[in-house]
Amino acid sequence: MTVRQLYDKVGGDYENTLARFLTEERMVRFALKFPADQSYALLKNSLESGDMKEAFRGAHTLKGVCQNLGFTALYEPAHRVTEDLRAGNQVKEEDLRELEERYKELLDALRAFGESNA
Amino acid sequence: MAPNVYSEKKRILIADDSPINREILMDILGNGFDYVEAFDGVEATEILENENEEISLVLLDINMPRADGFEVLEAMNKNRWIDDTPVIIISAAQDVDFAERAYNLGVTDYISRPFDVHIVRRRVQNTLMLYEKQRRLLGLVGEQVREVQKTASMMINILSHIVEFQNEESGPHIQHIRVITELFLKALGQIYPEYKFTQEDINLIGTASALHDIGKITIPTSILNKPGRLTPEEFAVMKTHSAAGAAMLDALPLYKDEPLVKLGYQICRWHHERYDGRGYPDGLKGDDIPIAAQVVSLADVYDALTSERAYKKAFSHEKAIEMIKNGECGTFNPRLIYMLDSVADELYSRLNGAPENELDDDMRKLTAEILQKNDITYTGRTAAILEKERKKYTFFTSVSSDVMFELSYKPYILTFLNDAHKRIGAKHTLVSDPLDSDELIQCCGKDKLQDIATLLAKSTPGNPIIAYEGEINIDGGKHLCKLVAQSLWTDSSKPEMTGAIGKIFIIE
Image (cartoon, rainbow over all chains, first blue to last red; front, side, top):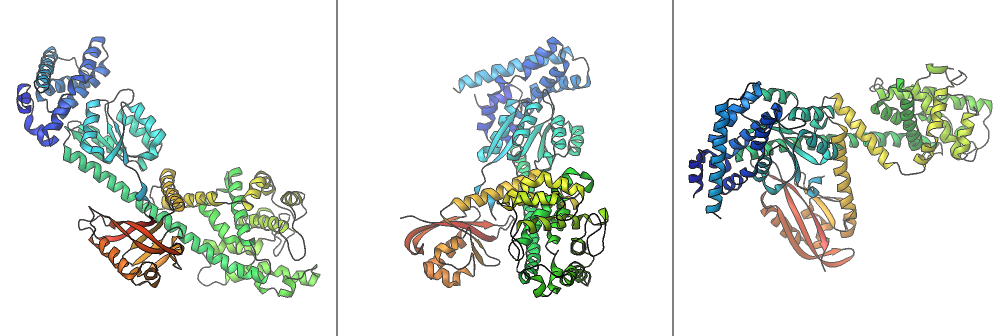
């Protein structure tokens, strides 16, 4: 699988990310670090325990990381969740569902990519 | 000076709660820097607290656990770290409303997510360059203050010594009075804050103290240097020296209103007044005697007691303090006597030891005051950094057995550091027009000089280091030596060579 194929598969912005990172090598190196990022877990756990301040921080960090790595499809629901939490609003169920689906897709794709290039 | 020769990689603090974001930033900026990472605002503040002098730049995320970026900025303002350590905040482009608050808290620039390699590198470089330039300028101002101060005191000391010379009491009296006066003033200001002496006041009074006896130039040497007791008539003549000195200063057409001359006038005229009103020439009493004159008077008495004079032996430090406290040498302001007790030990060690560090410290305070007056921030921290660089530089040149030198093109001068000129048989540390200098030609021959000059001329900003080997006359004999030098360039878009620094060492 090429890097472009990976980004196409997960709804990422290959062109812009490459333009910002300059090399595919750097893009891949950091994309493969994404599964270890704790912000999604922080968001989920904090929502469950009702800690809205930490949930906001988790969502905000997740949004930022997605933005940096060019994972647009995951960035979008993360952005909406962040803004709801920032404003103190109830987080929408459909946003959370979308967030979870995109996150799982991304992890699967990254795993497949990592294994195919191993 | 070129302290940067020895500096290590610049250190950047990256405070961001996302490890991926921190790693991306480090990766983008590359291994030309050292990095310290902080996971949250508390950690970032702790790192700044412990090693703020080592940190050249902070990249700061806003949303972080425990304490956010704004809290870090507030701490940086409170402790004034922000004056010397630039901050670039990292934020998403949508969070522009944060930007204004952050700028108000003193951040220099802004990197927005998503990170763009070129933008991140450019902003970091620009910010570091800006601060580097500011730091260099502050350093120059500090050097200037040091120089000007030194020249001024030197002139006054020379003139005062001329008077002392006639007085046959030359020696270190002038220097002593100054050291004692400054020590007393500092202690007095600490014990009685109402005196509100600034470092500038202390320096001025210290400098003016050198003038206290200039009036003695009008006293016949037969009276001045008489070994025995003076007759009442002779003593009456002697006593005119204080008013005479003051009159001399008052007659200066140009400088009469300068603070230094005004203080000099007070000190000359009233350094023989007594707190009980029984002194001369005006019989001033209590605090009608200006404090500068009171302090110099006490310093003069102490130094006279502890020095040998034509008519007496030197008393010990302890004996002198005791005599002053017992009122055997006139009456003084009780505050001064109280102060004297508290600084007695320091007084002894200052006059009998090396005062180097203390003076550095005073000079640093003075520089800070001058800069603050002109609305330039110059915190103790900047001063400490500069002082550290200066000491490091002095240290490296002093422990090195190499011949170190600096070359400047405009004017064309070669400067040897740390007296290394002696090793190659030059008379002075400065050699002007080095290519035509007989001393240098004697040392290594005109052809070698020319070769080195050509090598340097061929160096470029990207490739500034040159090396050369050859036999030269050093340490009184011929030795095979190596010369390594680095050319120095202006920062401009069309860099120009301004000079070079380098060293020569024996390789056989």
